[in-house]
Image (cartoon, rainbow, N blue to C red):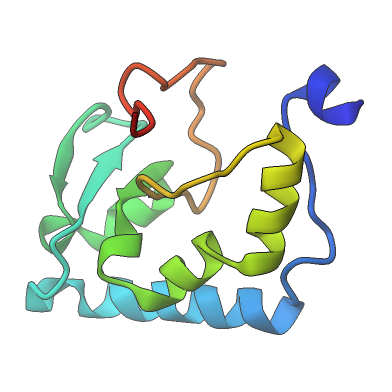
Length: 129
């Protein structure tokens, strides 16, 4: 099975191109409005002079977008992100894949790859018991 060999799957038919475009348009809007302080999410800088630094999204300079970065927990304040994370078709396929029930415990948004080597986050994001 591809999942067992590669460690990921591609769900080609879950999200339409229009839905993805709308999602990224809202992310762009969040970037443009970040200085208004309405978004309590943090951003991690993953490369460059500030590598390893975490700050509030409102404090992030536009130049960070040129680097690999990670927006943390955008699903808390962005309904469009929650809708994507909790999409019924995707959740159903993931439930079938793991033979259990998936849950969203956080969200990480990358515009480009994290540049991180393979790793496991289970110690930091333990599932509810």
